[in-house]
Amino acid sequence: MQDINNFNCPNCNSTNFINKTTIGKKNTNGPYKNVYSEIQCSECFMDIPSNLSENIEKINLDKCRKLWNDVYKPAHTLEAAKCSKCFRYYWDIEKYLFESNIPTKDIFYQVYSPKKGVGSLVCKICDPSAFK
Image (cartoon, rainbow, N blue to C red; front, side):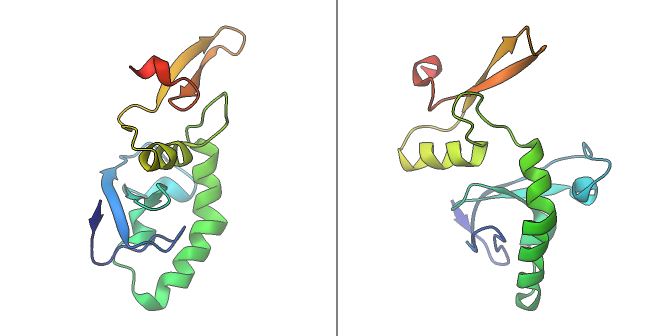
């Protein structure tokens, strides 16, 4: 975990992050259409758009928190990966595994469901033996 200047998580107010990733142009509409990178917070493990968490002047922090909670977080939650057994989101799984000193490289595996026509995700907490 690194501490950088100018990072502030609008979800939990942490100034520490794990990494920054480029997300490309997968979103063509909605609040994420102009987001090109996200920073994963080391406290809440949430992936936060860099435009809401990086190089934000202190005077604008409350605006960014409100925008995160009212606009971005609901959209993020709709698309976020979660376990089909325990219904935890990826950030809750990663935080639990980190706090339990369990490696977090792979946190899900996918099981195909013919009834749904898609795969369901199962997390490392629900089925730890599948990750050995």
